[in-house]
Length: 569
Image 1 (cartoon, one colour):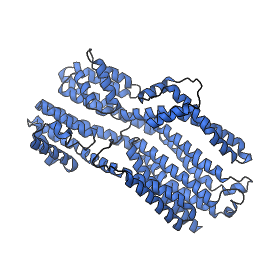
Image 2: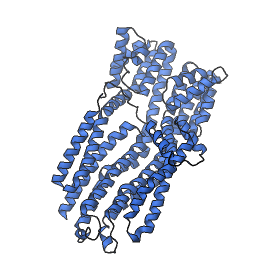
Image 3: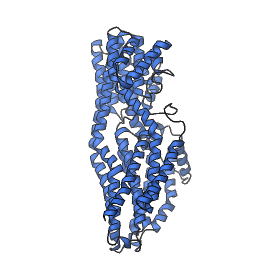
Image 4: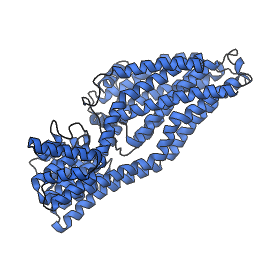
């Protein structure tokens, strides 16, 4: 983000006049820990418009006289859009970060409930949940816990009040947890269960409501951002018969600048409406399974560009070379760059898949009076695949190095040292706590297994709620959109008067094919980002990998369709 703040500071210098900011912008910048004041962002918006004026003026030069009034309106809309985009960008970024943080709400409440089952004091539970968590939500709770230190209170009421505006269920859940502190022992377990149930139901209801409102906006985006623009390509040759030749620069401006910006703005609006996200765990460098050098991805991208250029020129036509080089080169580079991250993440999922069974098995044995260390070793033989391997590794470290449960899992060379899974690490923390508490913690371990199962169900439900929309967007980006575009370009070339289009001032087939092809690649990027963001959140590695695959598929589909339909015509 440092480069982004620097760019805004530079743009703000283009508009040195006094401006006024808003409380919303101020709050967004505060949440992002931005190093610039809100007035700088406001000035940067107007400065960006000033910097865009020469580009808009050049665009107006290629507009035919009959379309000049429409061009002026579009130019004004572009300038206003630039201003609005800069002014709202921090709010969108803050919203994305906040919804990602709220995806941790069930896990945070689960940690509070877990600690309350063992030690029923909210001060201890709040401190435990903050210390064992990661991300903005846990950091915020830690801040409230520090403020409450030395006073009568746990920090949970003020923390829940701060986040209630964005996720009311979190406040209701923590209020129930607070009441469990003073509840009779016979009612405490029921109250704690109800607190966790409230936050899980809240996440389900928020996502269900969001998914119910997605169909209309996404249908409009699909119709006016994909199908209608591509259908209009076939009408470009017919404009000559109406006495208006649409020049190639205008086609490029429309399809490669204005329409992608509209689709991008609509996608940003849709993503900003998502209440919570459950993104995959972040894979940070350095990690032993990630390559230290990034040049292989660059090399593959360059090689892909060369192969794409030469292959498409020979098989389809000379004009397709630059387009194939861009799509194949960028797509292959992204796939190779993020492939290692995907492999690590697949292992993380494999480890997480068996955590529920492992906790059930260990918890039952602890309730029966077995030591946690013994229960872990026994569970390693019962739980299959990656989870069992992690348990076996931890048990071996305990036996050989004579270390405790926490060190065996979370030490510098522990079983989870290279498994960046917050869920698995929370499980290890619980087992370490159970090892200290002994037999009374067995029930808490079993309850944690139920919690993990319920949280996994909430995440699955959230993906299922949006599955229809996200799959349509992904398929449109990679296959259906390029298919329609390729057929339309080929048919426009095959019309009786298609060969006369360039002579009348309109675009050649090569120019039209490149302009529409770039639009296809832009759709592959934007719609894939939207689809991934709606289903899993805006995780950089996941988005990058899927965008790479979509670019490869879209490029090949578009060029093959142009060649196939052109041959038939």
